[in-house]
Length: 448
Image 1 (tube, rainbow, N blue to C red):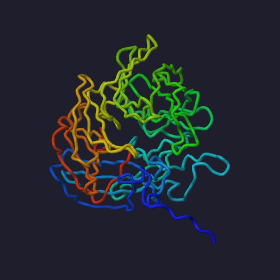
Image 2 (image 1 turned 60 degrees about the vertical axis):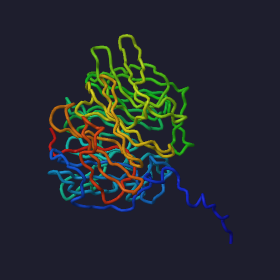
Image 3 (image 1 turned 120 degrees about the horizontal axis):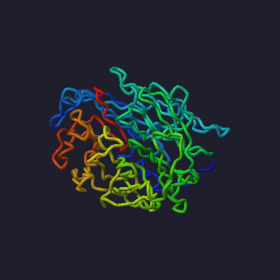
Image 4 (image 1 turned 90 degrees about the horizontal axis):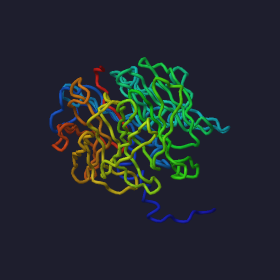
């Protein structure tokens, strides 16, 4: 009989950073009703706040990005926190152990974690991960957060789908792309109309397998980011920083979706998340991003503005703030249009150390920044804007899950978006911890 050498105390008790603290998964799917509230929930808020994130069922995952998707939902109605529930997304990987690549090397786009985002378009609620097809989630009363099944746009989608699609508020179209194919074309641009029918799919020519997590949409253009985080199968996250690859922005006219993509160079950097973009006259496009100067060293991301001058063929680059800035969002009704305000968080990531938790409100017109600093040990997730009325860019609230390390509990916090430095409007006390996750949305009952 052979025996293993004894493990050290450190080896046996110290989990990987992405499996420790509030990055660790929860074990139970719960449903709870009539949750306790401190403060007053605005009666205008009637709908679901949903947020997706990795929650490995077997409590093991090689990287934070790869855990099984779990959606946490809070139902608000009539000034009450009506219910909370959390459910794993029942992908084929979750239910049957389906591998993303079979023994013959063939990619199964129905297999994946569906763990990154959750969006609504054309009456469907979709859980997304950029490596696979989306999965539809049921939000009907009595079926909340049950998995309906894979959604491939009636067989028309044949590539992966980004976790960051953009809905045009003018046309209702859903713009997105897929990347990750082992052979060219490495990127494909897609467009679905307001009814949910996939009407455009076309290749985008890039020279290598880069990690293209997000992109930009304006009223007249789609802008792709070809950045130097390049496929490397020898890493837990199979990409590595390679500034020699270069960095560039690709501009495609929306009225000529099969036309030329015009590529313009920028300084090497990486961007996980775009805040917003808009056209500025006939020849200028303004983009706001959370920018990493050097992803190899994981320098903290900050808010930058890129201005594309199509007449000159140049991009000017300007840092707007030096505070940690991630998970940026705007009022989604202003996607692709000039938006005065944007919001972001300052919070920790796996292995990054403790960053004091805060929400930031950027005035993109004046440059002013207002902070909401949470108490020690309290860390917010992505903050989503929920409007108070039908005026885009008008009043509303920021909604986010907040983890409290001192009590190992989580709350849903509602802030007045026009006065975020003030105390929360409402704090809903949840029946279990909500692990750190990625993205979500406020899905109001009335859709206008």
